[in-house]
Image (cartoon, rainbow, N blue to C red; front, top):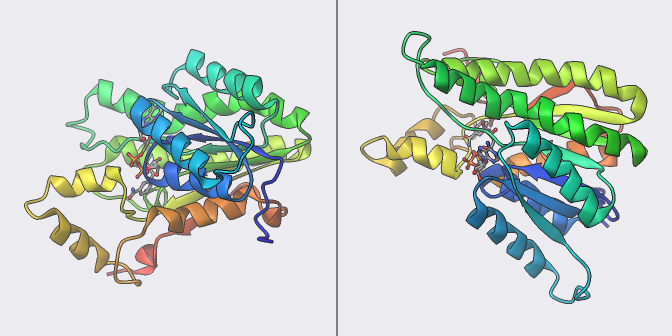
Length: 265
Ligand SMILES: NC(=O)c1ccc[n+]([C@@H]2O[C@H](COP(=O)([O-])OP(=O)(O)OC[C@H]3O[C@@H](n4cnc5c(N)ncnc54)[C@H](O)[C@@H]3O)[C@@H](O)[C@H]2O)c1
C-alpha cells in the first residue's frame, strides 16, 4: 500500500477543474479520498468529477466518489457554500487544498485597481475565506491538513507582475501564520511554490508569444531539469504534505521548481 493513504478522508480542492488542481483531485481520489472539486468553471469541474468516477467502475452505485461545487472562492457566500455542500455530501472535512488562482500582469503604474483587487481576492483572500469555514469542520474531524498553492514568485519576482507577486508573497506568509494558529488543533498548514507548470494558465501565457511551444521550450532552458514541470509533479508534493507522512511538517513552504530559483544568472 502507498504511504499516501487517504482512505476515509474527505478533501476539498479549489481550482480543481484544471491544471494543478485537477491533478491533485485525481491523485487524492486514486489514494482513497472523497473529493469536493471546487471551480467556477462548471464544465471543467464536472468533467474532473467524471474522471474520478471512472477510476473505480466497480464502486457501489450509491457510493459518491466526488462532487462538484461551483464557487468563486473570493466570495464569502461561496466559501460558506463550499464547506456546507462538502459536509452535506460526505459529513466531514480532513484536507483543504487552496489552489485556485489567476495570473495577471502589470506594473504598479499599469495595474488597475480592479485587477489588483481581483488578483488579491482570488489568490490570497480566498485562502482566508475558504479556510475560515472549513477549519471548524476539520477541528471536529480531529485535525487535518491545509495545503496552499503559492508560487516560485513568492520568493522572487518577474517584472510586470505586481499584483500576482504580491498575492503569492502573501500566501506563504499567511501559511506560516495559519500553521501557528491551527497547530494546537491538529491542523497542519503548508504551501507549495511551483515554477512554470504546463497547465491551461501557462498555455495561455505561452499563447501570447509568436510560437507558444518554442516559448515553453525556451522557458524550460532556465531550469536545472531543462524543461518546465507537469501538473502531477506539483500534485505529488501537495499529496505528500496533505498526508499523515508529513505529520511534523507545518507552517512551511516548499519549492517544486526544477531548480529554477537556485540559479543566480
Ligand atoms: N502553472 C504554473 O506555471 C503555475 C506556477 C506557479 C503557481 N501556480 C499556481 O497554481 C495554482 C493553479 O494554477 P494552474 O496553473 O493549475 O491554473 P489553471 O488556470 O490551469 O487552473 C486554475 C483553475 O482555477 C479555477 N479558478 C480560477 N479562479 C477561480 C475562482 N475565483 N473561483 C474558483 N475557481 C477558480 C479556474 O477555473 C481553473 O480551473 C494557481 O494558484 C497558480 O497561481 C501555477
